[in-house]
Image (cartoon, rainbow, N blue to C red; front, side, top):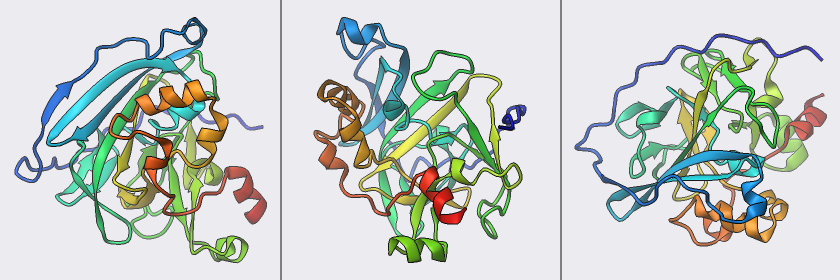
Length: 270
C-alpha cells in the first residue's frame, strides 16, 4: 500500500468573526481537568483530553475531562481542523471562533442553532486505541463549483453529502453521508499525515444537520445507531458526560441523512 504523503501544516485562513450584536453569551467553566472516571480499569487505558462547550440558557458552559481514547469518543470531536470556515448567519467564521448559540446555515437553506462544540488535539505518534490520525485536504472545487470555495483541511471524522445517482439506485435515498476517507485519491482529496499536534473540532445542533464548511456540505455530530451498540453500559455513561445538555442517546434524535461506510462506498462505486 502506498504511504500517505506527509505535508507541512496547512496555513491558517482568515475569517470574519461573528458580530457581538448577533450573539453574545457568558462563558462559565463547570469542571477542572480531571479523570472522567475513577475506575482503575479505565485509568489504565490510553487516555485523551476532551474539551467541550454547550449552551445552557444564555450561558456557554465548558468542561475539560480525561477519558479513554476510544475511536467512538474521538469521533465526536474530530471533524474540522483549525481555521475551517463554518457558514453562519453572519457569514463565514473560523471553527475556533464558533460558539454554542450561534446560528449556522444548513445546506437546504434553513438555519439551526449550535448547542455544543467539542475539541481534542491529535498528537502524531501518541498512543491511541484506534488508527493513526489522518487529515484530509480538499482542493478548491473538488466536488463542484464552490465545493469547497478554497482549499480546506478536515479532520478524520468528517462526512460529506453525496448525491450520486448510484446511491439513489442502491439505497433508495436521495443522498448519503460519505467519509472523506472514502474518496481520498491523492489529487482532489489528499490524505495528510499531521507533522505536529493538530487541534480538531466538531459541532452539534438542535438536530442532526448538514451545514456548510467552506461551501462543502458536511454533517454535524450524531453518534449514529452503531455507537450505543459498540459501547458497554459504563462507556455509554462516560460518552454522555461529554454532552451535559442531553440525558440519553435517544436525545440526539434521528439521522437527517443515511450514512454509508468507506467499504460500502467502494463496493458501490468500485
